[in-house]
Length: 218
Figure 1 (spheres, helix red, strand yellow):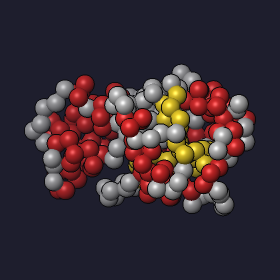
Figure 2: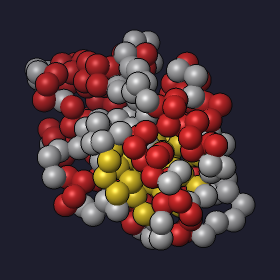
Figure 3: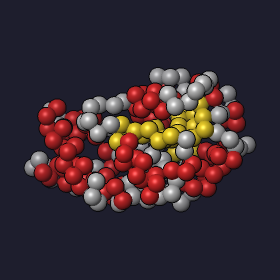
């Protein structure tokens, strides 16, 4: 189906709408240091996108208890400093305006805890573009991207999956959307590893969010 027939757009937040690299890497570095692990920030960009508990387990072999502890340390710094060590990509607002002009329903579907996601969108002036902002809970339970997408779609009264597009920057966005038979459009300006988007079968890959918005408006 052509992109021009889409009626609902789901958006990842980190790496898609904003560049949170400074805040996330500093907060992960802080959490690891509290656990006695010293790490260079340049090695922590891989934390942008996936759920935190998954990343602490996969990258450092932490057990469930230590993952929980690491997330608490992360949030300790993030809630005070890291949340605003962030910023919009230059074309984010223009792209969102194009989506709205086309009449799409826009939803945020992020693995970031929902209260933080709402606070970020409000702080950077983009909350007004979205019909709803959905994220994970603060309960430290594991929420897959599919869980987040399911929750976001619960705010839409009716939909045809062929009319939905998931827009993100990592494989988790692609794999989560695939569980619902939803097409994906990914940006290269995010934090995917080389070849990650192609290998996981993104339907569209563009340099920026504005390039995806232009496809919608063709």
